[in-house]
Amino acid sequence: MRRILNAKPSITQREVDYVTDAAAHGWGLDCYGYLNRFIGEAKQYFDSELAWPTSSCHGALHMVLMALGVGPGDEVIVPDATWTGSVFPISWLGATPVFVDVKPDTWCVDPRQVGKAITAKTKAVIAVHLYGNLCEMDELVAVCNERGVTLIEDAAEAIGSEYKGRKAGSIADFGVFSFHGTKTLTTGEGGLILSHRTDLASKVTAIDSQGRHQGAKTFWVDEIGLKYKMSNLQAALGLAQLERAEELVQRKRETFHQYQAAFADWSDITLNPEPAGTLNSYWMPTVVFGPSYQPTVDQRNTWIDACVAAGVEARPFFYPVSDMPMYTDMPQNTVSRELSASGINLPSSYELTPDDVGYVVSTLRQAVRG
Ligand SMILES: Cc1ncc(COP(=O)(O)O)c(C=O)c1O
Image 1 (cartoon, rainbow, N blue to C red):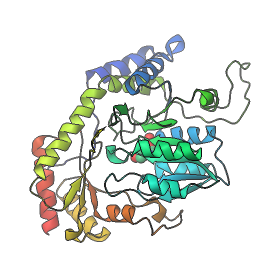
Image 2 (image 1 turned 60 degrees about the vertical axis):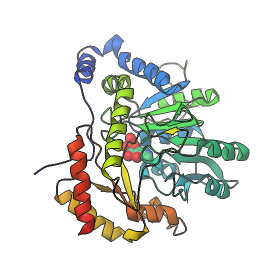
Image 3 (image 1 turned 120 degrees about the horizontal axis):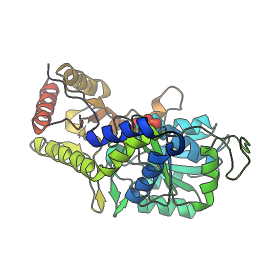
């Protein structure tokens, strides 16, 4: 049976060569060779002053929140429509996630709702660039600056997306990324922190070094730190991927445009938006069904099941995180709820051909028609 994967990275001889070299030679005096090259390439690609590679985006966010001193009694604002990876690190530190709704046009956090949700307890706002779509950064920066709150971009899903010419994840105080195997660029598992906050650099570096301060005597630890380091082997893979970032983002965009053409004769559906002044890297092409389909979660899931049965790995739009059993339900976040019931993620593996895209859309059409 034809099998169309939801995601699969693009691995060329360059990746194989770098990883092979790191495995053979990247030890001893060369144990940070690829890591240092990866950091240099990341700073250049994202145009960022500071960069710390990590073993995951979860870890990156945990480190940033810890560096900001987030703890019990603090609140951190986060969109309801996201993956739990944007939220768990808040809970790990004993702080409270405050779920706000997203906008129907961007699927990203609503800056006005953020403004309303900020209280004296708010330590940070996490803005998630969902599926490659861009948050309204000017508005978010303005509201966070005005209220004295740190802004963090979760750009796990938006590597290569741009807002007014600046790369997603390089605009706010901090940006965090994921290089999980499903992402636009991969290191297998992996992540990255970017920042321009030089005032907090030594704090992040100390946490990154398990609490050791720079210049301290060997094995002396000054504070409790974390251990989320990326390995030199992963950095070798990541360097090759970063060097191909333009090509890979271009490939994602081509796939999206093929979907756009294949859906051209459908009415009352929406695909990922690309408002003026933004460039969407379209990590995950996603279709949202309008009211004429009367979509419900169950109905949408039967369409996905039919696609999967036909070999098409479609997936549901994220459930609101506040719906999960460990958090408190937020029924007022109606946009997150509606998107969740009516959205389907489409395959965007790098192996996808234009013919595969046609097959995905015709399979979905059959599923929707029943
Ligand atoms: C928006 C978002 N944030 C965070 C994460 C967590 O990334 P990682 O798996 O690298 O920890 C993901 C992963 O899917 C994500 O989609």
